[in-house]
Image (tube, rainbow, N blue to C red):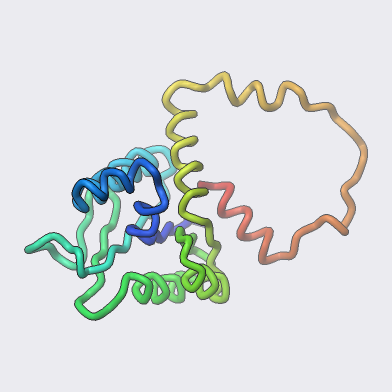
Length: 175
């Protein structure tokens, strides 16, 4: 099953220390840095990625929809918030969607429609780690498993997550 990652653009930018610093200098710099980060991530993971920004701060003479190196960029229409666009897309995609936002309203709505959710800082960490692991830390993966000791101890059903939580965890592991 392919995952469609829906990103609340300004939420992710403003939650990130590096991106928010660029955003304070110039809003376009923050957007471009986010797009560059996601392009690197998409090269590795090949998930469908869509960033949604509020149309109020859209660059002049820009389309509502654009695509840069495989990353779909959407600016909300005049009078419509990015939150509404993300909710609409999450409702349409349902189980295929992974919503990246720290906005509780969006997260609750997406989860109620069956979409998996992840906070903006957590997604940024996972994306950065994926790029880091790919760029030169291949030995790090071996270090994790070297201390594993086989055991016959069973976890039992009391620790098993619910079906919805297991599906959500499975999607998040893929990113």
